[in-house]
Length: 93
Image 1 (cartoon, one colour):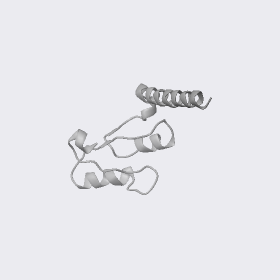
Image 2 (cartoon, one colour):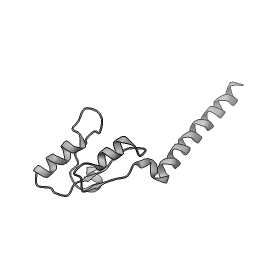
Image 3 (cartoon, rainbow, N blue to C red):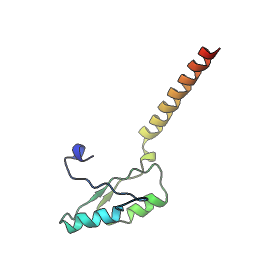
Image 4 (cartoon, rainbow, N blue to C red):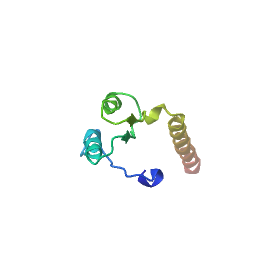
């Protein structure tokens, strides 16, 4: 993401080993950066998405599951597996 944005990025974790998003945002604020964006990698709205909107980030992205490309990816992967399984079944008989 850093290479794509041409900006520094600090990975953080809503659940797990840390730093938490709140800790990462606080570190950027202490370093003199008042406007921090939080790019979430959540699939659906819920507890974590709500919690992350409560951080001191200036902007927080929406869950990915609300984007049509996520559904398209899931369907494409399903179709790939279904097609492969169908071919394997034909070869087995």
